[in-house]
Length: 112
Length: 116
Image (cartoon, rainbow over all chains, first blue to last red; front, side, top):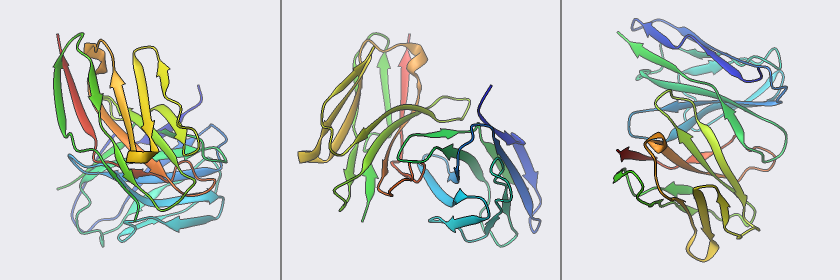
């Protein structure tokens, strides 16, 4: 089945550690996105990529990094510089044009 | 500046009631796209509808209907004869960026609870 796979579903991290969240899609979409969701809030854009080897910062990129070495993959690294990393992270992809985005099932990150 | 406001944080209804979720947006662009997504407890966002700024026709899909009014910058969503399975968080979102349907500005979401 085509879709977006995020792993792991739950992730625990100690303060001061970097952690990488995986996002893979087999929809052949060019564009991929990372969003952060905090309780009772809407989603906020962290990073996005429209093409392999290129990506742009979203509204809340500080403390995060990404790479786009393959069309199918867009991993997100939450660095120790991110002051409040505990949140729900959603990955999405979209075809060219202003079509709808497809979302993964999310990764819930907790800093302990 | 662009913004999406969903003033209703939580709504609770009894099954079979009709319910309307409000969405008000702000944008300076003349070309933009509006979306509604549903987030069930499992967490992923499920696409419901997309509307571009040049198409003000209302749309009906089964029990769901959408009312787009540019004059009031609103894009409201009505569920007719609600069911327990409609319980979820619903997000309204705006896309201004050309060729980037996934670059979205989200509202805060409305949590709908439908009780049997």
